[in-house]
Image (cartoon, rainbow, N blue to C red; front, side):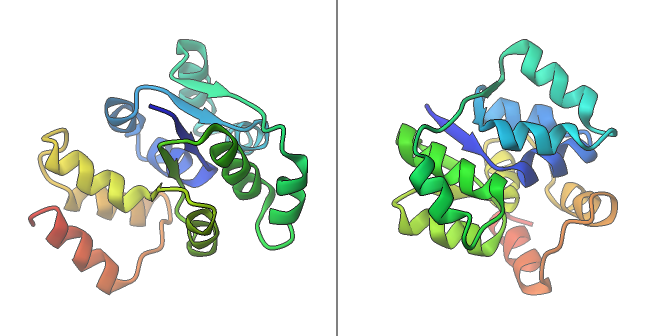
Length: 161
């Protein structure tokens, strides 16, 4: 299974110490070099990211489609653009991305997307997470993850809470 990630799902889960939850769902995650660089800028999560890189559960891979990256960078940040280009090039099974515009553009390129909320619901439904609400609250309070009240409630409902 080919899984590509943008920065935010990895960084947010790292801030709250829950990267292992992500690794249980997706044992190997690919990121473009620009996403790796973005992740390594956060000193608080750098050790967790370095551990994933050393173990091989996080692998850096570059997209060769520079034309697509340049086109995507007209509307997206470099990490999102590179992640979408890499996922498109690899025909990834899933792109992990949270930003609304990035998700929409990824889907226009035929990609299946999953954000951190979907990861939480997936983890809860697979029995990897006993309760979703505490993790969701920690993401909001500790990582500064932004989610509307409607989406918050829908996520809890999908998680059966």
